Amino acid sequence: MICCPFFQEMNINCSLWQENNLSVKLFAFAKFSEVPGECFLLFTFILLMFLVSLTGNALISLAIWTSSALHTPMYFFLANLSLLEIGYTCSVIPKMLQSLVSEARGISREGCATQMFFFLFFGITECCLLAAMAFDRCTAICTPLHYATRMSHGVCAHLATVSWGIGCIVGLGQTNFIFSLNFCG
Image (cartoon, rainbow, N blue to C red; front, side):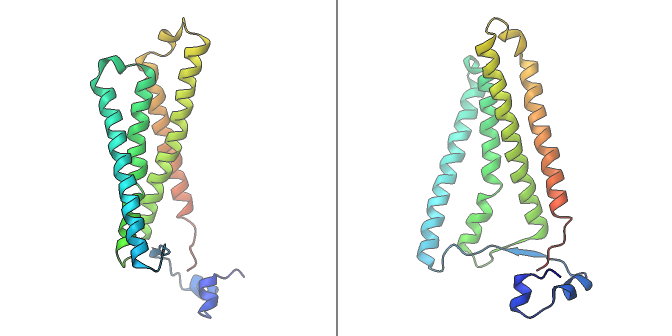
């Protein structure tokens, strides 16, 4: 019988937990520090880095979309990557900041599943998008005379759409699989 350490400390049998069909409703975040001043310093540092990341990625996307000289496949993928990074950081950092400054350091099961889906979705999409960018650069270097026909706007849009689609499908599948498991304590 496998028993959870949480229940071993409380002298509660894990099989009793499973027999009663109880399920975990809330996941708790571990504290970064017991000293309030250190949490405030960490909060300030993470918030500053978060705002710099959001601002930088938003400016990159804005510059690419507004300048017609940057409407090439390489910059199209960079704009997608910048938008992806905005979503990636927004999927985790706000809840982390909230847990640093409040006493409520937990997240509901549904909130955790949602956060995990978006984290996986953006992470997997980033990997696929980087592979599409590598293909773009390889095509530009290896066959420069055929580059314009092989990497048309339609091909670039298709590669980006497939990258986002794969991220969504795999993220949804992984999240569904993980949250179909029983969490004992």
